[in-house]
Image 1 (cartoon, rainbow, N blue to C red):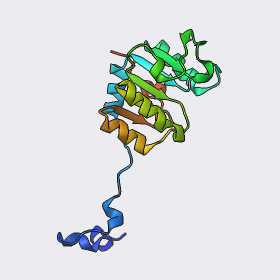
Image 2 (image 1 turned 135 degrees about the vertical axis):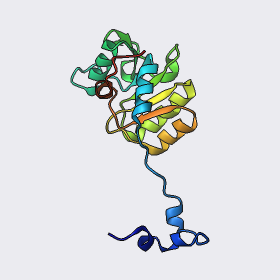
Image 3 (image 1 turned 90 degrees about the horizontal axis):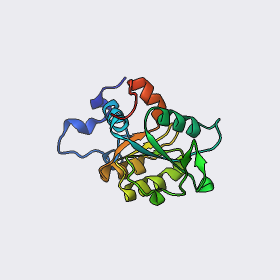
Length: 169
């Protein structure tokens, strides 16, 4: 293993700038337990984007767990708009929801998550939660820049259990 000085010889000279390619390297998003806990305890109303009527789907199971944990969950899926999932009215988009949303839980492909995050910013949600396998660094940064809390590549239901949270406080 080479030392830091051997790998980056310019570092011993403060007047020498690192190569341009290193000057713009950003750190990947990191989840923090304090933020996850705060999102899960302070959120009461959750919009679940990508909700499914199929019990074998993760979004259905997570929605059921969140409802049983005391959250109000509003399913969002244009294919089911106007119908109900787990006795909750389904909306086509976040902007159609007539009440304040605390958290937007995203069950969409990574390449579609950015648009949902932008819509969450537009409606003034307090946080966005990108489920396991959903990763969009630039969308997460836009949410943070808008003052939102962010969880990415995590499952809200699993985090409730791992962090010992039993619902909103």
